[in-house]
Image (cartoon, rainbow, N blue to C red; front, side):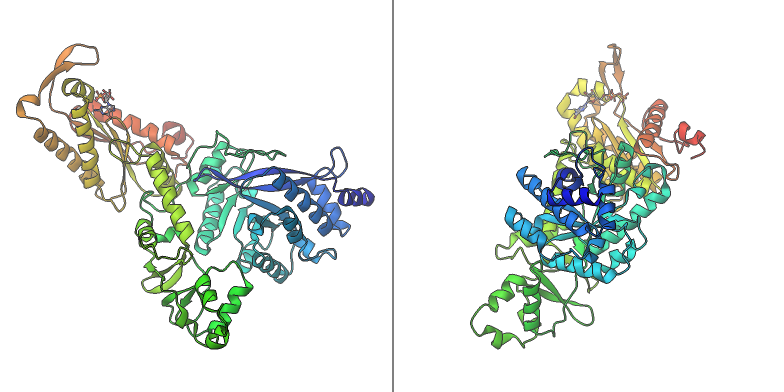
Amino acid sequence: MAELLHTIISAKQLSVVFQPIINIISHSIIGYEALARGPKNSELERPDKLFSVAAELGVLARLEYACREVACQSFVDQQLPGTLFLNMSPLSFTDSHYRDGVTLAILRRLNLSPERVVFELTEKQPMDDCDILRDACEHFQRQGFAVAIDDLGAGYAGLRIWSEINPDYVKIDRHFITGIERSAVKREFVRFMLDIAQRIGNKVIAEGIETEQEFTTLAALGVEYMQGYYLARPNAQPPLVVPAHIQIGRAVPRSHDPFRQTLREVTVYEETISPTLSAGDVVNKLRSDVRITCLPVVSDAGAPVGMISRSELLNTFSWRYSYELHANKPVADFISPRTLIMSIDAELHAAGRLVTEDPAQNLSVDILVHDQGRYVGVAKVRRLLRSIADEKLRAARHSNPLTGLPGNVPLYEWIDQLLCQRSDFIVAYCDINHFKPFNDAFGYRCGDDVIIMLGQLLCELVDPECDFVGHVGGDDFVVVLQSQDWQARCGNILERFSAAVAQSLPADQRDYWSPDREGRRRRFGPLTLAIGCVHPDSSANMTHHHVAMLLADAKHRAKELGGSQLFVSRRRAPAALADNGAA
Ligand SMILES: Nc1nc2c(ncn2[C@@H]2O[C@H](COP(=O)(O)OP(=O)(O)OP(=O)(O)O)[C@@H](O)[C@H]2O)c(=O)[nH]1
């Protein structure tokens, strides 16, 4: 076996397959994980065997170098887009064959930038000495590589490692993914990891997704990056674009209003420096870590003072004698004049406007973010602009062209999110009665005016802070209400609609003749509105499909009552779920 392994390593008898990692919001492939395989039909074909034998024989690092070379070569040859995710065992740091700079040399030869490479450090293997791991991570990150913790949750020290090293990505172990739609506990764990990651600015990748149910559940929880057989199997020639069966934008925004996000969405905590630190020390810090583009300066009391811009400060120190002249001055003297300090509750659009409208604004100076005067983090300008672009795209893609209101996709996402969070909410289906004969009698243009009027009325009469108005097509609107006084609001909607209809048509036109469904001409009165409400049971393991079933029934009942009526259903879960004892 030792001889076979030796030949495999020295002759690089290895092959590599790539599995894409997909951003399901921007619907793009962000990169590929390279997975090595031993020679076909040999005893060491399977990677688990290959690597465990290498570890036993003390040649893990040599095997990893060989795999890395094959992976990088194939990645470059195929011109794969995005980032290359390479596996690395923490055990290889302690291997006597481990050498610094080997990967950099491979990349240099292939003309591949380190910024396009992520090292995945598995958490599965025992790693007693966290310091080694932390040092190695910092070392990689200083060289421009990104780092991911792989299999988070599979080992013993996942949270400890996560808190000690500052990874760019965390990959949730597939244990938490398999069957997540059936396990409230797994959903809570994933929620917890997403929450921490968001607070400290790490990206979360869910791996091992094999079924559509797992995919939709993770999307509803807000997971943005996904990998697994359901999305795409590993392949020597992987897809270059997202496979067609992956639906666009299924992830749910983490704020309650998908179209009105704040800086909270893009703020990450970053280490700060004191205003009294010497400028010379800061220059040295910037020179030793090429990834730092700016540094937040915060007073001892926690108040944001300003930003130090890498380019501005190094420019000042590039002149002759400037080091001697300025090195001992406090760094507070070199705050960027382009510093923007904003509240965490500022709207993304407002921040975006400030950043882009001033032509002198330096786009590499990130925004300092405070919460009631105390520093909380930094909003990366690039991330901010990308979020705004994504948000606009999503809003445009999923809104109704007549009213501009969000359509089915954001509505269902919102309902799924509320169900996942076990929130209490009411869903109201609003449908105009006999709209077809009205359209036939007065024309489409007049019908459009009524639809627009109803859309505006709904927006005016709900609470914009917590309620959601969706326009699901034609004369159908769905309102998700979390207001305590939802019933009074529905009553108000009915009244105001009737009043608006009475006002918009001259008295002699309020009653009219038009063909009914059977084609018989009959007399119709003024337009009325039917509202069917349901109060879904969030603990009953439902999705928006179940809510839609309940809602269709409630709408039907409201229409049966005839005229402007509100029907509130007592059914809180579909019969099938209720029979299972889930309701
Ligand atoms: N003016 C206008 N009409 C539309 C639009 N979209 C759909 N419609 C029309 O709306 C009508 C909806 O028909 P139905 O759902 O049967 O509604 P209804 O006549 O109110 O019947 P009930 O709901 O059973 O009372 C159809 O005549 C559609 O052509 C739109 O954007 N503008």
